[in-house]
Amino acid sequence: MRLSNLCFVVAMSVFLFTSNEGVAQDVQIPLDDEFVEGALTSDSESPVLYDYRWDVFGVDGYVVLCGAGYLREIRVRSFVRNILRDAVLYANDTPIMQDLTFFNSLSSARRLETGEATCRISNVEIPSGDLEFYLDFGGGRRFRM
Image 1 (cartoon, rainbow, N blue to C red):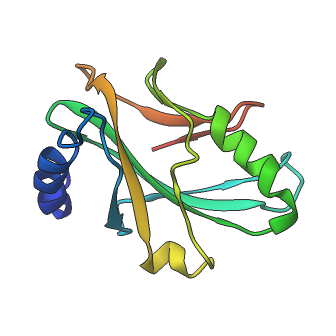
Image 2 (cartoon, rainbow, N blue to C red):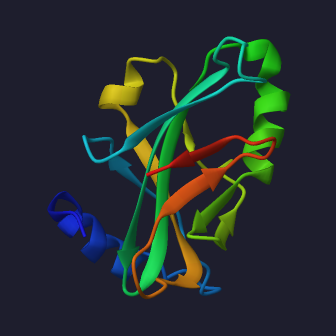
Image 3 (tube, helix red, strand yellow):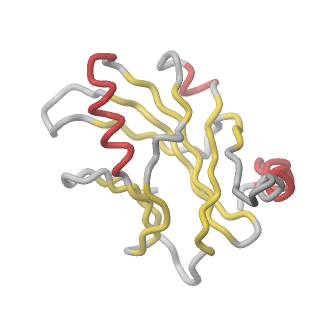
């Protein structure tokens, strides 16, 4: 686990399971060098529609996904939102979490360096063994850590 997230881990552990219904709450953390960059296009030869950064780690034995993105073309907002809704986080070939619409929406590309990411804890325990996390956006669009 990354050392820079030590305070986040403590906050997440206390905060996530304290709602009245026992439902986890999203938390925001600053973007840092541990976040992986990615970009969505409608196909391999199209301009970038959505830039994002993401990270995965564990808290109390559960997988946590954090992310933030910048929509380059406002006219394709619903198209990108549908892609994010159908996106899946995998550990190896096991689905962990679907629907990335919780990623923090940033106001500019520059905020991908200085902004905050929204984090969501999954209800899936961290699988054992060597793990390779990747995001699958469908249509052959996969982004590995």
